[in-house]
Length: 307
Image (cartoon, rainbow, N blue to C red; front, side):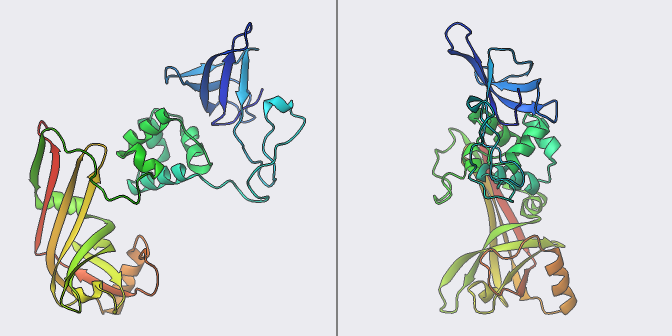
């Protein structure tokens, strides 16, 4: 018997053949996939060490062999045939959307894979499998990962990405409190997506999102001279960042107000480009750096009243 991370093990009744218990293999103890296995049982969500007996069967996922166009054989083929895989030859498996979101959120919070696995009560090997393979984790696994990463199952699944935030119900007893400047700086740093409020060239107010960085307490972003965001240069502007936790109906916002200037010194521009965490998401030629040094920094947070 051989298995791989993410495979399911089914224990059947010797008399009737009916499923008595099933679970997901979350860790291997031998590189060749032979028993024993760490199994997370679907009925209790507990992980136990399992030495499969004659009443146990492995249900394989489609695991592509490196450098081949075939998957590992399923048990009902007796190992005689190989099942074609959807993955093209000579290509490693492409991570699934859930795995990519898990990995991105983990890196955003500067969490190691081991620490994330510890928080989620799972094997680091299994977390590596989720991040690197087109896996389909159980709801229980997603709940633990969402809790470990401080996000939601909905966010990890990518559902509702086209809907405006804040459609959930308000807290029964909400508390709105002001944030101290130090808290605002912590929430604002180090980079992300914020919104800048400007007066456009036609004199009408406009609010546009930009990818920003925080360098030495100064907010900086890249744009192009002919964009709406470029209208900020030479004026006092408002810059806002927020976060909404849909599952908990709470969140925070930070507002920075200050003059905006274009960065022209060549060394300063080069340093900003080197320190940037990402290119502007809209793409295109956006090499004009704009800086905002806040003269006012305020924020608010909504939490349950008993906290």
